[in-house]
Length: 278
Image 1 (spheres, rainbow, N blue to C red):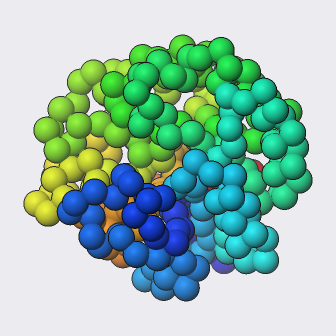
Image 2: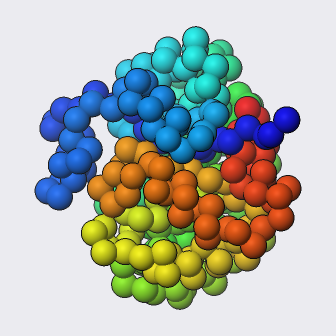
């Protein structure tokens, strides 16, 4: 029986300009609702069996909405939600939401914080330190310039599982590999850290990128993490500004043809299951 294919990173939303201010000019393709029916269509095109649904707004209402959607949909294997980690009462929020077994992790949009060292704040770390107690993981959303701070952040929580989103958003458009590659290699030395092969086309030139532009970054992240700690993600529908769902699946498959069948099974499903406890 063939193994299940898991998309470890996608979003859903009911679009409004006020709630999604990060959808700027040039992103018209995603300035609309993307709901479960749209997701099912995309999954079919990419031959994907299950998904991990990730927050797109820093809102408890969104976290509750995503969990309610996932509750009775077996193909929605898990949710990465948002809770106010810096708040003194975050423990009660974590207790409430973690009662739903579909909540697998928490994420904060770190790369949009004006302070590049936000992740090192004492109040933020107090909240993160509670996640293990509730059986949760933490998704790290950063740009490559945040990797030095991320090393210190991760080392404060050696018992917690971390998942790096979008290979830490290197400067693909500018064809810059260093110091992203070296910092990522150092981060990958921590065995409690996983990484998502996702979000790459939106860091490239949206309309003119080629697979050759992406290849050095795919090769580097495979070298750093290996297929046992690297997982496929679509970043749909954000990625639609640069690439269809089906095309990104095919690009990822072609970029990893050197892997053995068991390694491909890890990359396209097994790693996500292990990291998120799906």
